Image (cartoon, rainbow, N blue to C red; front, side, top):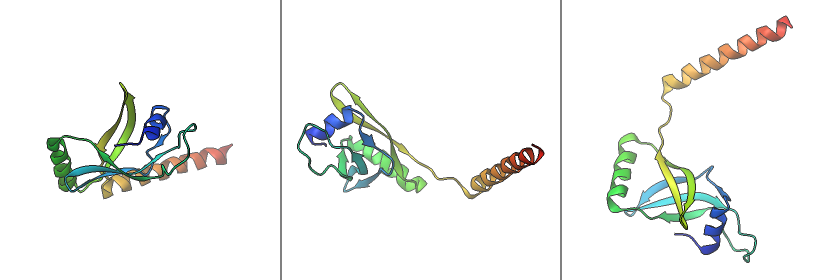
Length: 123
């Protein structure tokens, strides 16, 4: 549910999804922290990060609620799409890395850095 100038800005691709996330609250799906740049020809008013309600069917919201509880994971918007005069947001369930995945990634990064240091010493 957006204001008219917000929709125009979305059609121009002026949305920032960096810190945005979704929550189920009171049986409705809400999008938090979506930044939309102001539309240039309209008088300026506050379009800063605020809560926006996402329109979904009840069954879809119940599926999201179950997925959020089961995985203990946040849901995040993947991208904004503007088709046929409507603004849509793709929402994905996120899952954080487990501890062993983090250690594996750190070990690979350290090995890569050692190889780079060895190459720089030879040159």
